[in-house]
Amino acid sequence: MVKLLHSEACSSIWFSLAGNVKIGDTPIPEGVILLPVEKVSETVSLSPKSQLAGIRFQPAIGYGLIGQHFDQPTALTADPEHLPGLSQLYSNLKSDHDNVSRVNTLQRWLSRHFRLTKTLPGPLKQALDSFNETTTPGTLNEQIGVSQRHVERLFKHWMEMTPKQYQRILRVKRAIDYIREHSRANLAEVAHQFGFSDQAHMTREFRAIARITPGKVWG
Image 1: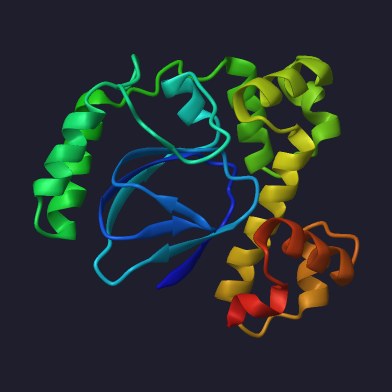
Image 2: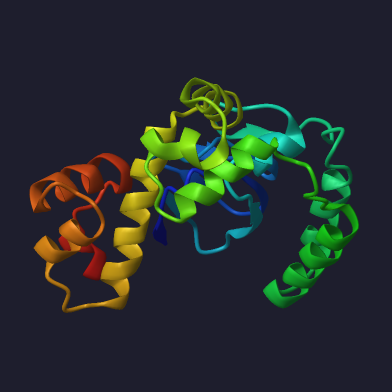
């Protein structure tokens, strides 16, 4: 089975429990796997006997909890200081016999160990919230009271991307979600609605970030 994991500028922790799993052409070993920030969509391939669970963090949260960026899928060798018990969680998930049990195991672990208070710097959180309300990068300093350069430094340090790159990812993801929900949508109108200069621009952005064309979203 091959699925497309759409980019949302998130990072993830995967628990590869059994079978053959690949991200793109990269085989994923069994164990706790730390995934880099998603800048483009990737294919995920699962063999018939694969078993996979995971936690997908909101943008910047993964770095706030783990304190490190990764260039490629990386097997965990020791529990991060601020995110304890991952190795034990992996063992518990491996002993579960179905997905419902695994979801319950993840929820119990999250309730014990997952604390988001003050994980992100205030200006970064404000910037991310502003983008969720479709603010443009050039007006961020007016919205949150810090310089554009400071916001750019925060994005680079926490997310390894610029505010403009994050905005591009968000725009493509929002357009994908809309097209999925509106099967008869006019693509030229969708392009205008989500801030692309025209349909050709939207298609180029889809190919660069989502690795599909807008028309393929319905397929």
